[in-house]
Length: 386
Image (spheres, rainbow, N blue to C red):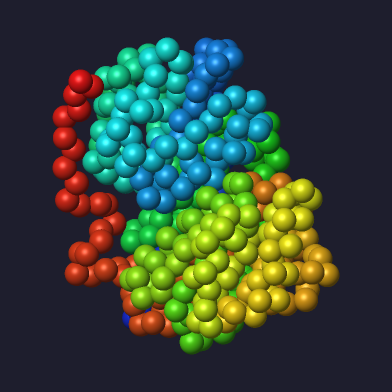
């Protein structure tokens, strides 16, 4: 059984690859940490002179899910590195590169890409080199055959890290590719916090979590909701955004999915809630953040406008217990970035299960090519600073 489904059933439904790629993540995470540790000497040589600059600017970039990796990482890395870390999508860079590159600041551009063949990913590096020749590049990708990996290997100002082979997802949606690149970046930039020893508890919990998902989410999406809203704060806001994209992708747009922060949701977006809307709130482990989130949770339940309001949480609380909730399986508690690796499989499984119940192939939810695994139809135009 894989995620509660037989192999034969998954093959018939066109969901085997996606199910395997969600399920394999704890093992892929362990392999990712081992890869980074093996490359540690060359990583240190590359990073040491950059991190010696107190005003080093770090830009995290990618397109789609790869951009959301940066959104989750930026607030966390800013706190722990004590320096400016920004998330800027390649789709923004290519349209206005001069808005983002400043030749006066030493800059490290960290690029995330599953295939490494996205036109925007390739163009973002070319534009950085053109507008800021001193820019250095850290490339995290899942395909050794991708153009981004090939070019980075030939670039003396770049360091590339290749994720485990199985993380190059065969399914349409990014699952293990995303979480492996997320972890690799943490292991590279925060090695004392993210390494095989420190992450052992997280890896063990991840395996336990995969076994628990089918039981905990039995009956999810029966019947499928019209809308799903994902709410998260700080680093978990990026995870909420990724959850919304997974639901949109795997339901082929038949379930409309949105995201916001717990605080921001009140400022207008809350009007989206109706009787066919499910709200999934990712609850933080940080005491200060939880106060705001639990206030909103109580408010949404008191409003009684949504079909369902579900709290996804680690630490128990009487406020959470007063309504629908999903608690993580027991395990070593961590900060919110550690929580991200626990929450991601829940959101991936929700989207996968909705896809199966709608009769849509999770591995290929858009067989007519309306949207593609690697984006098509993008023309990159030459940029003139004038």
